[in-house]
Length: 330
Image 1 (cartoon, rainbow, N blue to C red):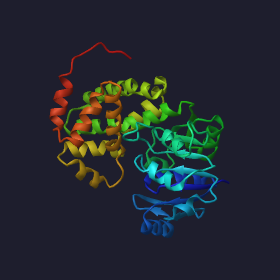
Image 2: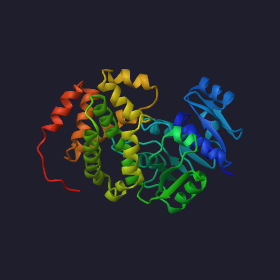
Image 3: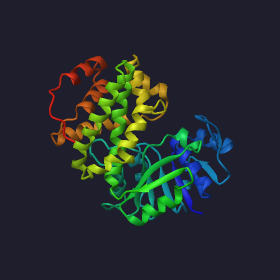
């Protein structure tokens, strides 16, 4: 049994907590919302994941210090924009940190393992690992077969992550390219918003297939500036996550894009979903990386302009279709 401090009580955090709890670990889950923490502690159920209650080895708190003190491992499921302020508040840690959020920090262009490593006062911290891949909370909580990837700067930490999370229905493959794993997980959210927009406009499956394929190409072009291995994007944390996020109504990013195409403002769509939509944040970061390194990212650019510059989605499609056709390079 491992004593775990879990940061974040959204549906994703709740689902992974259920995996850890069913594996017999003792978990204290932190959420900044004091009333929500009390509700979860009382019911052990999440209002957006009905019908599943967590066992007694899970506690909830709104006290960050309580969640972290004495923990042998920290697992994170806050948001990409919340990573830095939360870990800066915690300070230096001497235990493994497992990241499950997906994003790129705005301004710095850092991937989340780089952000946490810098807060811990080192580069490529052996304490930092991640879990990523095609996985909806709704499927995990129902014990539906799921395969994901774990990664870390240290090989030993990858084995720890596997041991903590593996169940008969939750299969974890190790991959030593932590930046590639995290980059694919971050970028696919942008492409899911674009696919949701296309579906909302009635563009059809052909359009979505093109967006996913060209989107993967766009991710591959940009990944090299973060020193990722492009082949990592062929796996679960790249193509696998891209597929599940772009094609499922369970995907918040896909639903956000679809709502925007159907006439909601970006803020109205975000509020209707009522949970974090990471692609909204990450498309800013990815666009910044593209501009900095002079790499064209047309799908990211169009998504950014729709969200932040009020570009009409139909006009965005027209602009993308007018781009010069070049030989396809894979």
